Image (cartoon, rainbow over all chains, first blue to last red; front, top):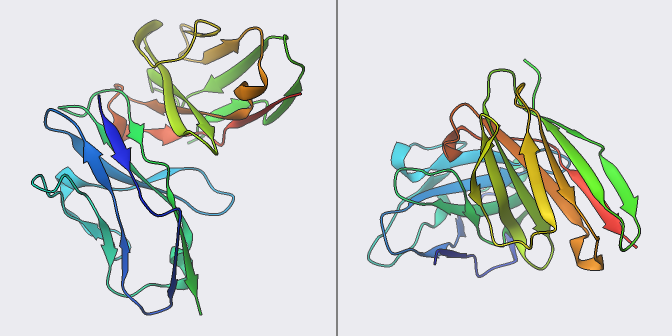
Length: 110
Length: 113
């Protein structure tokens, strides 16, 4: 069975502080990992996927297969980063369904 | 281009009734997937349709069903509604069904009373 765990429901940081949103997964094969973001009153949208290894809006995430983690990081939080963040997993090759974590609400305070 | 459109935006139904939700994908997208979002369980996969065929199904009871039409529009139906079916129902469309190509709709908020 595949599972995604986001241990923090809420993470509150000050503007300019580093951000790390934790994500751990359980999957027997080679998963593909994603981070999705939902800003207030907006649709759920893809932030980044591990396979593309890019930095989006200053966010990066590295897949650590040994620790089965895919933590989302940003060195300096901005007010506009406040949103709900979901870590998600799909099976080998991407597949056609996502297993989501329960989400972490990031609040960036001034 | 128009995004993924879900109708209606809000619904209130009574226990025992049935409900039909609609999802119109982005033009050209042939895959539509449905997810249920609740505060307790988060986002859970319901099913995926591609070219009018259900390709994948999540762990939901048979009361939850869906279909896809030749124009790729999809409907999901929930029969014999229970209070626990109250949720935000999201659909996502993509070109081939690959999840990295997902575009999500705004969802239908279903409240069962």
